[in-house]
Image 1 (cartoon, rainbow, N blue to C red):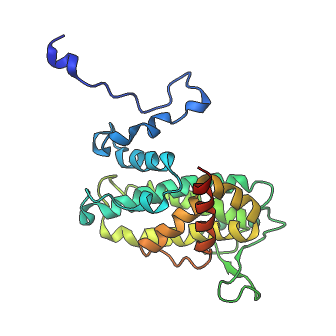
Image 2: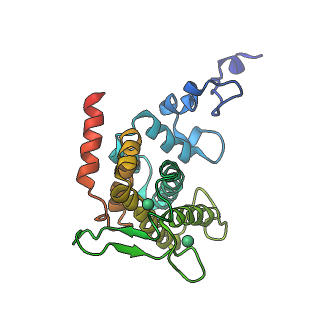
Image 3: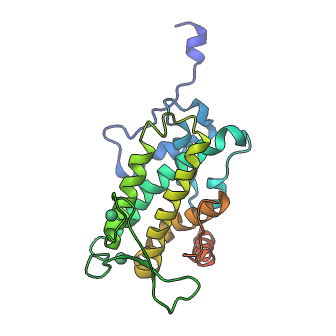
Length: 240
Ligand SMILES: [Zn+2]
Ligand SMILES: [Zn+2]
């Protein structure tokens, strides 16, 4: 082995290796803040970079969603939004899972959310757009169909052929996806409040999502009171 080889820095494998204890799952993400994402092996660098930021401090919602200043906005913004949307859909799946047995067709036969302008009036109802003709699905099916639809669209190589380049045309998809995912959050917040709050205290996913929708003008966020989510976040920070 020559001196150059012996000086090479070994990058720890970025995976949960066989035998990894549950407590150490994804520990590599917490430790990776010194690795620029362009140096993370494979094509998932940006995703790993964002997940690492989330793991290290889920309360820093504003920081996590902000495009790093080292990345020129013009080139990176669409890819940045693509990766965040992927991660939101997948983490919202965990919130949906926590509603198992609570959000059922009998209690929530349609996707409904209280009207933000007039909470005492009839709730807003949303048709599920996952079908040839949009129609009513019960709230849990709406959520699952929205998550499936998001995942299949973002994996559709006709619209998203690359993880490092996204055309401006695709931006309209992000708006549609954000609107639908926001309704799932809003339904959980208003109708399954206890489950939502318990999840939010651990993850701050709802706050991150509404701030993200507002920052990138993807969806109106008035279905969920952002201030309440910020209070929950501030409480978590004060306990640290
Ligand atoms: Zn429900
Ligand atoms: Zn549906």
